[in-house]
Image 1 (cartoon, one colour):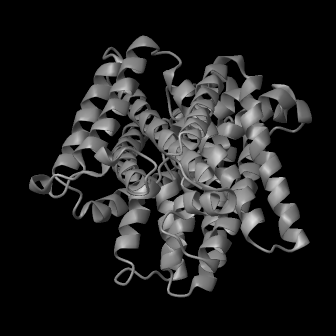
Image 2: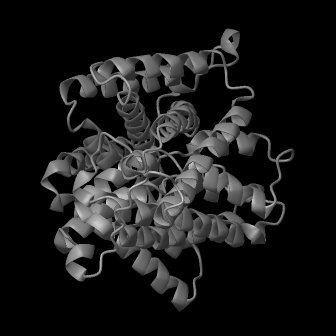
Length: 451
């Protein structure tokens, strides 16, 4: 989920006066921070499940994402709160909801970090097929931890630069795909096939289409953080416009690129171990494309994964400061630029779990982690929708849009049960949600979690 997650929002909150955004700046941040490995690699799993109809999955996911952002922006404008959606959940339903929302989001961020780590390892095996997945994962994890130890001063600027790299990579694919379509590339063999029937559009039926929704939503992960950053706009009323333009640009990039990819190659040819865009360009015989494109994704993906580790670390500190985590986790080491070492240690444990999982389950690990991370993220999005309905006075039309968005999100979660191969991801996420809910109930009974 090439995404800036909670860390960037926290930094923005700390620099509220110095960092006022224009609406177009927030739109650009949203576009660049949302495009990530969920789109560059995770979409291949969705194509396998749905075939060419993956395009419609992304359109539905775009609508569901719009409803979440729209209502979160409304809450942010009405009453800016540093805890964002977790604070709104707590205000709407009590501290137990804020506790659950915070820890579900932390768990989701942890899994997203693991998903990105695994994706980077898979993409690196493009050049080194014999090197085990867990070995690449270990190397990237160590590099990410080193970045944290040296601090992240100036890292935002580097990350913005790398975000341009991945956005440029997506646009490069679209331009080259159109060039291949019109046979402007010498030596390229064109196999463009537009699905001209319902059977070709939905080759695996409605069930396959349904199960692909989770991967489409995963590619939009991060919109909740952009909603939080909306409080730093110079004109708060521009928040809806900023989000709408962001989602329009993202949807155009996603739909165009995926539509071209599934038209250039049979859906059976795509697999979870290779970017669908590299696979789609095979017949163009452009020797430079696979290496440059793969390298661009890895460079940009590493920045996203490193930011995700910082996000997990920062979020745990925030939970501790709010009394929703042991106070031990808010401790910072002054000698290491106020590094929250205990919280970073928990993030490192998450990386270690991902590495062990890559060692034990090398064939399916990316699908399992991505599915579980996506489901937990969508649970938080449902929290945002129901909190908005509770806190805001909404017109009937907005209520209907919110209900439809919630229905699509719920369908995406349920759809993961339709695909046997990724069902373990559903069980992982549900175990996390039930565990967090039971812990909240226990703390409430012990009067530790007060109303």
